[in-house]
Image (cartoon, rainbow, N blue to C red; front, side, top):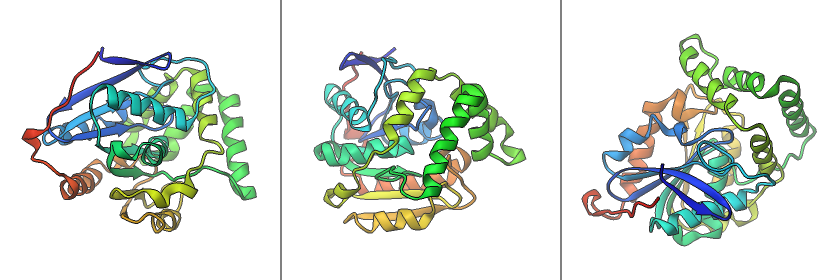
Length: 274
């Protein structure tokens, strides 16, 4: 199992394909399996590197606290160890936050950035936003991780035809280490690099489901502050856009990567580590 020892933790990763590097960063409580509908399509043209964050998947699960900045530092160390940078970085939800952090802390490692159903900050300000956070914490404690996982899956994949996906998502979330999941959840709360996103100079694609938790207008507002950013809206999609609308998402992603590729795919190389 390929892994790299980073700051006291074994970080698991997988590499597929050949060409310019596309780095995939998963969401809270998930793993590189988030990208199972993207990796085959991407690997036809690119070297695809998917990473399990600490506390997730097959990476180590040291005690918290965790921080988004620490996740980004882990990713930066993996990239340098494997000689990956600069890479096209793609992150969903928490992975998008890590992508933002990486872009402002380690800009030389990021060739382009795709953030999916994410934002450059998670700072509850209104009463409604604070109540939503409290409700989530209470639900996790009352329902336990398996019950909470079912609720999350039902909310994000509600249609009858999504039953198989819903069961798969719930099962994966339920497999999390509870302490690590809580630590990662608290890493998000209060995090922000919003005041620094104007310094991001690489091309940025902000992908949003039309029914995501955060309104499209909120993504358009922050994207307007990034010099080379644009927003793409995926119809009939909630928070798990790469899962609930894989074909539409893959086409957006492939078009963006093709637009910003800098070398023919057959010339790209990556060093595989263990």
